[in-house]
Amino acid sequence: MPYLDTLNNQWLAMTRGIVASLPNITMALVVVLLTWFVARYAVRIADWLTGKSTLRADLQNLIETVVRVGIWVVGLLLAATVAIPGFTPGSMIAGLGIGALAIGFAFQDIFENFLAGVLIMVRDKMNIGDAIEADGISGTVEKITLRETHVRQFSNELVIVPNSQLFKNRVTVLTDAIVRRDEVLVGVDYEADFDAALAAVKRGMAKVEGLDPAREPAAYVREFGASSIDILAQWWVLSGSHDMRVVRTEVMKGIKRELDAAGIGIPYPHVTQTFADAVPLRTVAEAA
Image (cartoon, rainbow, N blue to C red; front, side, top):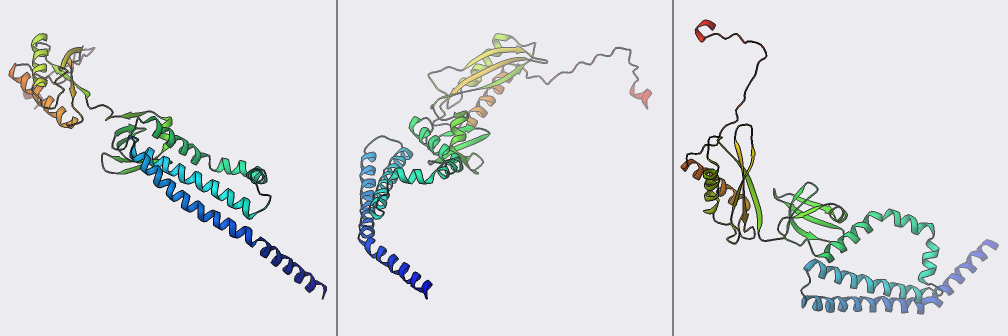
């Protein structure tokens, strides 16, 4: 039957083609195997070299990943060239055509986060272990990858943030310096003496442990408030070794103690009500 002959001829032709390409396929497999060996030892060499440097840990991981991926890309292209005669990277890109554009749009966010991750690692401003505030997130950086950053919030929840979000928005690194300034607003009676109040506030801060001895605490009259004279108290904390919340508590306790000792009160808010017309008043007995 003619169609059986046709199928038989096609089968024989395909079999001959597979047999003829076996040497090329074998060579391609050898190239893949060599690529595996080269990538493995190249990563070890890169790890040894970066281990002797002062590069941050995530940047070392980036270099190892780039080395591994680069070697595998080159190796697979060589294997495809050996296995498929006439194959070139240019012909592959041309063959994809509009598909390459569609893939680019589909992976746009991934590429954006990847590039942002590389730039975050290279500029070396935010490191693992830093406390940060970014876009409503406050916590400690636990891990930086090529696509995302893991932030452990101070309330112990883990937040996974895309790198592009950290790169494009403002990030406050709270632990960039080992000394940080803190402040509190203190209200005192209008009857209080300015100089005595300022001196009491300074004494209250000076006795607190954890302040930077190289910078004296400062106190300034801020404004005339609705019911008090507002004094701005500022101090510098050794935040690398002391909890700022604890130091702030001790400062406020010290200020209150010194103001009490000086006989200076911290007034409650006063409210003055004015009526346009006379208001009838009655005594308690009359009301009863």
